Image 1 (spheres, rainbow, N blue to C red):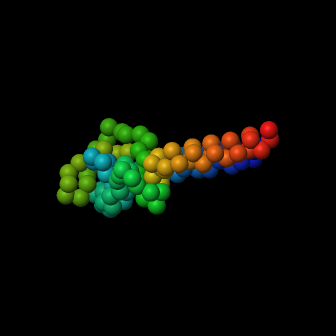
Image 2: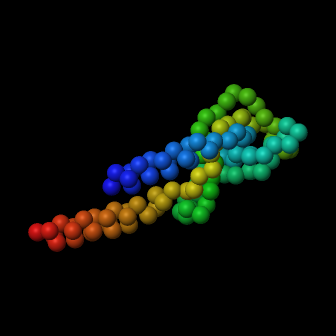
Image 3: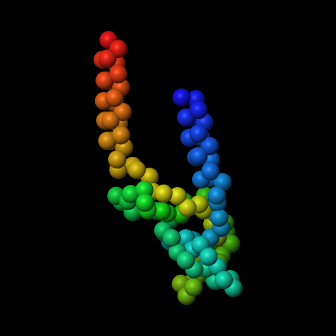
Length: 110
């Protein structure tokens, strides 16, 4: 059990360590820049009901510096990481499965 918790802890640190710099405007983060112009957008939030196959830009910090975005105008420089959408819509099923397994194990011991 200890090994499992150490592995989960190390994997969660891996996502925090892979931060990049981008330009944010509204709910979009632009990832690439060429000659001072940012392009290549990704959403900064997960749409409702999204699966884990959908990726989004999780913004860690925002600076006061402005950046140019294509023909859209200006945005602000941000530090972000690319992450998968969480499984929040399925947590109720996870609790039922884990709870059922726990009840089964407890009844088996008695």
